[in-house]
Image (tube, rainbow, N blue to C red):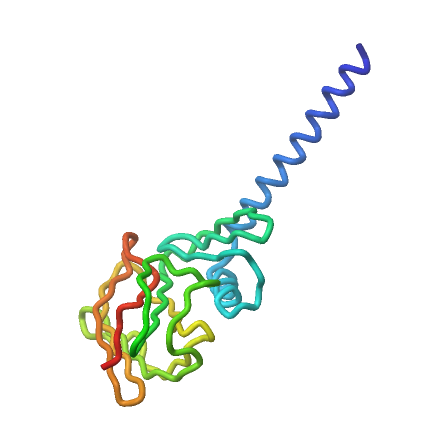
Length: 177
């Protein structure tokens, strides 16, 4: 009888410890500050961290490691991640950006980017170098509409985009003409 009670107590302790670690891990993920999440997104996009997949929705960064274990991180409440792959000849359909597998046509190239909000305020006006994946990664204020203009090698692409909860994070429709 004493052995049974001891086994029950030991099993209960192990289960509570394991659950406590899960809760601690969840709290740690939820408590990451905005800059830490941005750094993590950058590292996955740049290939600095090796994982099976890392995709980013309007609300979450979802990472699956090589053991197929999945982790989800909340994105900043006031900022929206957008990844744009301007192209000349080749593109692919995409809505939810995969930081580890989406590939744009123009890798490691410099683009002049201007983004204005719906009232004409300039949010971005700078030269941006695309990553080795051919994408321009940016964080914009949430719940707004924007006019985007991208210039490259005498060509221009213009488009409207928005940063609402239902919007995609991958823009592959901006053809440079």
